[in-house]
Length: 299
Image 1 (cartoon, one colour):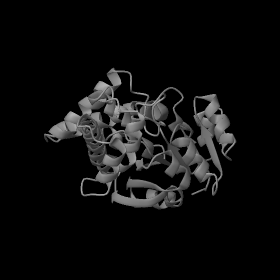
Image 2: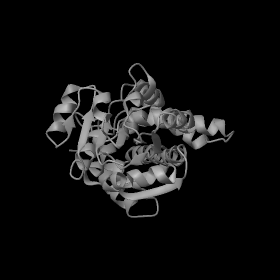
Image 3: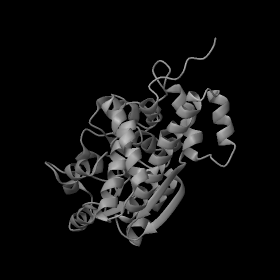
């Protein structure tokens, strides 16, 4: 396996991953937005004019797209990237797209002497740049071995959860159920604290010090309070990403004939947020669905 790496999709996660990998590997990157290519070039990534050009000599191809439909179009659409992969190349799917159609995608790649590693990740852009991501992997052992150095450059925690593509997506779906519910619960809790007249910052400090704490409360809580500031909180994870991810959770639960009422309620909050124009804001802005305004405090 050659050590050249291609990164397709230089968005909020793809760009810092490409920059991190460029510290150790020769990396080509492609994105449909020219400004993202310029940013990548400034961080040691060689820009490519097309996805086909980026992957032509790459042993590992990281794909950072948003949906399963985008993945299919990228690989097998008009002038699809799959036809330009180097023999034996491994495509690493880093996005959360759900399990639907992934076995078929892996089979089509295998027919072209390429392999699929299912490796959805969590952690956000800052941790991506630092190589501090959580990556859950479903892949055949040989394919995983070929790309393990690349994954280890990106991850502080690399969890092998199964030996076939789809296993990583399945575990990430469970992960996103918890994350979405925790973000929504944190928003409701902080909105209630405000409605009861409690000091917002002191309440958050007290909650994060006790048994009610969660990663999402500690991480999203301060940003939820910033959601009411001019411009809102810094966007580290868009609200509409959780519209997508909670939809994946719902689809998976229905396919398994499993009721997930708490996840369904959280999904409705994110959908309401999107309908209210909050989709491009940080996901902590979901607090504005349950509390459009905070109470006015005394000067």
